[in-house]
Length: 250
Length: 356
Image (cartoon, rainbow over all chains, first blue to last red):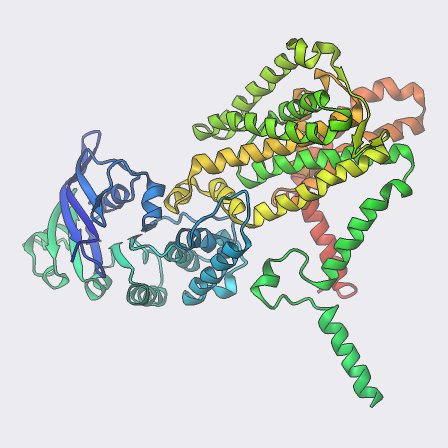
């Protein structure tokens, strides 16, 4: 089985602050891979390197076996690398439906924008409605995304990313700020999407309990370094993790 | 029996004509999908065609001006309201369209106007280039530079533009039919304005609109959703300039004489005012805004006329002030613009006589 994502020896520094230092890991198809670590550990920097917003000073990212260096963020998205953000980055002035439709274009094939293609538009609409239905967003389809409550906005962002039928979805703290009920809903949506649409996921999360229950593989980071990489079962017993992340002295 | 019949009839009536529910996705997206909507659309189109028969010459001339301004405002609306980019150089594109049309006038008017649009669109791509690097007020200044550059070229490139004396055009013709006055030219304007109106509407409700709105709302997310920012912005500038070029060509055929004075900065700002007063967000807003901005000076002139000719010189100076105050009042009192106003009037009558 070829890995879907291979990060090799990534290093990123901002004027002396080492955000990433020799980070390597592999994600296989069907994984639910979690990245955890205390604040400032470099988790979001890692996702930004993977989606092409930051250029690492060292190391390579391979996606579906191809080297991604020099590939623009939009091209990475088109190749099937989806992304959601920690702080919502929705198209606030667009309706929920249009947000999801924009994502759906990635999956349904774009056409030349100046010659509207009715058949493609219908295909996009039908698929967008399927995704909306799936995430229980259908009643909100015509509302402005920016006017929805926080929990729903988070779900719209996941919907927009899933509508693009990504092969790999990078989720940056999708559960932060949600109530327990919303977290459970979202976890179910994500697991279903992984099972039914075969979306591999890389998830940055603070909720350690959720991560240990859901994930198939865990990467623990601290100050840009890898503390632990492996099965979720081994995280709690690892002395280095316990010291850095859980605050207990080993 | 009779009861059954009447019941069937009323049922049929309400199902076919009084339908207000959009039951399918297709109806949800279609333009004027309800029978009433379609009915009013046809009434409006018929009214537009009959307008020259109903109006005296001068009001008709003003209506033609409004329609031309609406085409230009539509273009700017796609850029400002759609892609969220600002341009103070819209008049330059009208000028490019107008001067191009002045070389292909008379029997070739339609070709000249179209070519003017295309040429303006190409130069629009060039104006779009700074938008790839800069935003907001900085972009406004960059587009301002184009406005001044165009003004300079219009005045100095005498071989093509006739310098400050400008150029004159013979009356336009369409398929051999001469279109001497405003009421005849009206049909040429409609020939361009109606398709361009629906095209703008269609663009905004399909992929182009989504790309532009995405660029406007959040360029980071847009990139990570696979949107090519460069392409989306440049298309917006090109389409916007194309509309302006068409409007300029029509204007040249209406005025029959154009000088650089017709395409100065004030003109660009007037177009921005149309978009703002009309209310960002809808195509109808651009049309309402154009109507408002063109009509205001006319109304003010009429008021001065009523007071007597001795007030005319002093009032001319005050006209711009009144104009400015009206626009400010709009921004403060009705930020949604005329479209917002129209929406509230419509809702009032929809629920009339019970307000809730």
